[in-house]
Image (cartoon, rainbow, N blue to C red; front, side):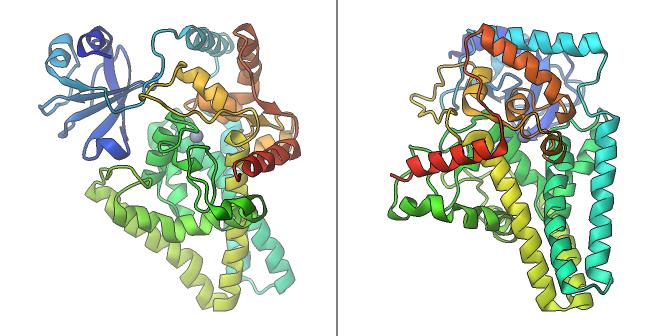
Length: 435
Ligand SMILES: [Zn+2]
């Protein structure tokens, strides 16, 4: 796309939210923009703009932006726009996106519902956080028989994953509540679980949600010792990946919080081949403070009260349950038969962004109320990928609208009736990738 063709579009854009962008825009802040509002943030860096349609615009303004500054024709036309390196989706034919967005907006307007979470999500968050505290107190401070402790550790692992799915994930997408500050506070529940929300937003909100199932961009399909995308190099050990994948999924959470976060921190990169990312001092401080807090809460305090062996075993049991849950839910959403793994040529995706999301994502067990409650609607992954800023409590209602619109446009909609059907399909796909 040439510079001149962008100008008329960008005139209407303004900044509503600051998000860091990984990789190739290192040293720059990215801004998620929407149409028709005033810019109300202060930035000292050159600008990277990311539109809500997930078309990436890199605007190097060469001038600091002050509060109240509005992006206008003059400013944009004097900026240098680099489009060559980023992957572009079809931004011209967006009929499907327009129709679907219209229908979804119609649904919310008609029902007078907020797009963010409702009372149900607050109730669920309270239940999950209370369970967390009760289990922690029982496991660390109350002398209980080891057999009961094992059962509690298993539940504790599931509880950690559920906090991730239901509280942290929605809050990280700013969809938990209409109150932005509350979302920010709750998104730090990831740091409480040992992770880092800044890294997560780079990896998940930008890379995974924009470039789903595209090798080299979506770091969620870069699983060590596994081949998930046909663009990834086939190695000998991949032949056995359908046997050893549960082991990798099992240790994924512990590896993430105790190793990979530090690897990212010191390497300054999200993926294997990406550029260094921007890492502000404030985020470095938060990184170390929350890692220390997590270590104290989950390692030091338990060792003092129950000894090192029960602590290690307890951590291992809860960590493996949590890792299996997180990895499985992710994989069943994208790595199953029917979802596409595109090879990108000339940095172009043929489809509009929303169609790409439908092609690369799948639902499972959407009729199961228990799974829907526990997984924070992540069994409705198609709806989540289309509307990540809408809370998961609305996904069952959106599901009907999305399916109907896909039928109208003759688009394949990927959904597995049960968890096990999706799981079997996942094993089939990793088997096919192993040869
Ligand atoms: Zn998400």
